[in-house]
Length: 302
Image 1 (cartoon, rainbow, N blue to C red):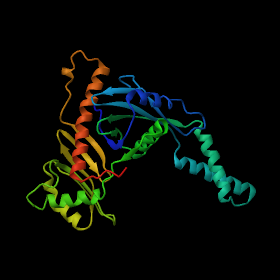
Image 2: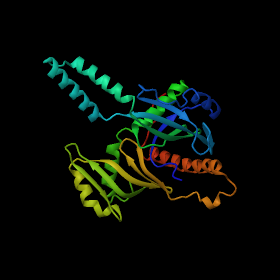
Image 3: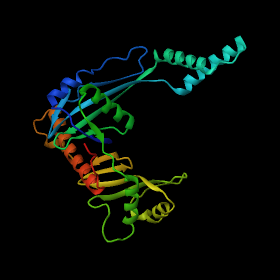
């Protein structure tokens, strides 16, 4: 089971699992009403069926976001058709305010029959270091999840782990990595075989080699020399492989350390999910802490 595949991470002070469960009950799942565009909720874990699931050194809970999909192109086409009809029948120009009213009515009509997209993401929390891991590749969904959490739990404080100059820091380290300075600027991390760089004037360079990244050294250094900066780079640490973005998000996470299903003994599916989530969370929190140390992360003043 792939419990952590993409992630956005935060520092947060959350209540005990018992108290958090009470807060999460304030935002239960409900079907979208005909004119409702989206809704956030907290729902039971699909495996454990618990609203808050205790795991090793922390707990997990599940956020759900339901949204109606209304294509912009379809809205624009209907608005244009309505505007053209008014112009033809009444021989006049439709003003900005009236056009907006037409658009609002079109969206309301489409909202009643729109397809509902449901997104569920698990959230892991390690209490000792106040690390919150939202398991999604979408920044929008991650922000919705932390916003909903703040809404129900009120007094909680959560903050993104923002590393000043991360983009420049990764780029400088990558340049030094090929510079033969004698020390590895990414240690204790190992550089993988993927890197993506982007320049200010449309310069893009992306490479994924089958062997060592050194196969693309010349192209990478040339791109850096022309002002490109690292947008994403593959790293590995302690059995965890991932692609780190320049805004400290984690993509394509995988673990070399498998929690072998043959070792589950008498554990049922919920117990095994708790065990597996706890193991992978602790490994990933170690990755986060090591990265913060490598990049000289300084927490904001309280």
